[in-house]
Length: 83
Image (tube, rainbow, N blue to C red; front, side, top):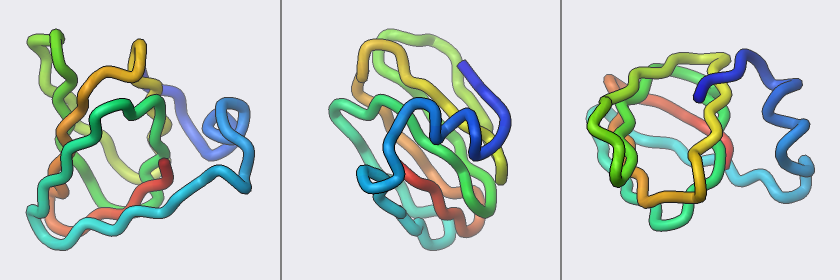
């Protein structure tokens, strides 16, 4: 599910479509139809509906979410990522 680096993220989204999200320490957010994200700082924990695994990502990781499934993300400390 993980690609490495901003170039991989740019291949999946146009720069004008990107939105930066900043999570405060241990803040949780839920996304109903998230398709991809690029971690720009910090570390995150992520779980995806229908997937029994938990995932941990850090700065520089690019993630594609299969079929735009419901996703829950929590910052480990503080974190910022692009949608």
